[in-house]
Image (cartoon, rainbow, N blue to C red; front, top):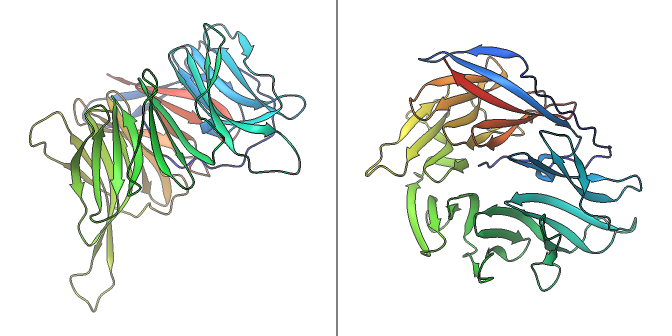
Length: 349
């Protein structure tokens, strides 16, 4: 799961898929154990990461066709077989895949040069039946979309977040005070800025909120991620013990295993501030977590083996701090400045 800023400009480019079975460069990293990274190249695209997603052998993405109209495509990672899913003169964005279903936003009116903002519906396309459904009664100013199991969650620019049970079609509307940070195992990780500055989990089926942490008055909350078991968040703490001296700011990541009773927080203090990074990474996979650090004025990605607590180096961020995106299982999805999309795995020796 992930909570990473991905608002890049929508690019114009044909998608040239490169399927490779060869594992690329192997890089030694540090930790209590010896860790190595292996890259698996998937594709090449100039699209922002919210317009492509990988699930098993399936790589779904949105790319402009020869006429410049966004279309939905499906690519097999193993065989390279390409299938065009849509062929309509509409704007499409924010693609997701869950099982045999592809979900995306689609404009309710045709693409026109006189418009750059469209009201959109949520489309559900089944890969087996080839059936298409519109999930909303009318077009909305949609912003956020994510899927987990039987639940789809979306937000609009004015009504906050709505949850759809994909089996029963029932809907729930979250209190507007909550901001969704992540979703996993039928639970949402939510932030609430008032009346208290808190981070909580919300069990959708049980309709139950459980507090994870409440920030102190001198703390500022920046980001969080969740995989159903572990929560990790990033805070900036303001410290000025002597009012005549300069204010000090401490950056730290905190990790908690929610499955353990009275779970202890593990805090990782950073030596330099990183909250000005344009694309701060914070993601939790099945067995690994990844986050951004700043070392000697260079942004890097640290990793943690959640089973052992070992910390290692995933690699350097690119010049825009945008190449590491989020976990797909235990592989870290990457997209470099040239549009190359890869999955980086870790092997403990």
